[in-house]
Image 1: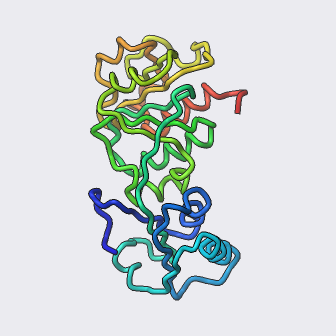
Image 2: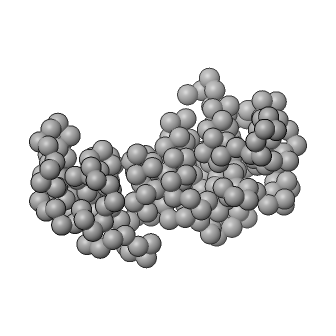
Image 3: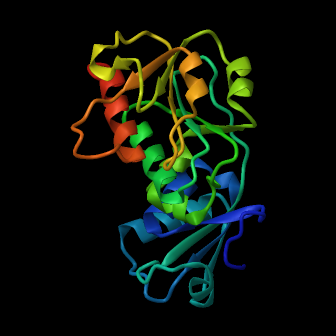
Length: 237
């Protein structure tokens, strides 16, 4: 095993909780599980061990791989797995991320989205690698529970889905978030961390402004997504 690169057909879940989530959700994709000599024989260790036995997954006791693939000092279990294809459920409500570029932000957003019951995330290219171990770690394993799909363009995404309300979150949005009537079926669209959505996204559906004091220029993407998800799922979660 080597330090992760985007062109690999496999990746790593770095840590006990992430490896457990991987084994629970996608055991058929697990290649091997690696256990460090410093790992305690605690409850989660035995759960991982039993799942490996159940699914006939090889456990390798070795410290060497941890020095190669993990930057975390307290990482004592690693799950190596084959990357897999995923598809969003087109009739569900969606979170749409246009050109996300930060691995940690993507992972945090995945975790937040799952927490608010939005389980389908469309990602518009170019975009960060969802299987990067830093993304997986930031998601706290939520990646293994979400439906995700990459699209070459926003237009391709629109052509693939059922009719719904589109809400684009922009600094110059035409309507304030708290004034929006929440429909049954919708997609929430957010832009890149640095540049946001291009002006042409004003032409798609309803543009929304998350109003805040002018003491700051804009909200962090993760914060903006969290606020929007709360507003759209309030009373429904």
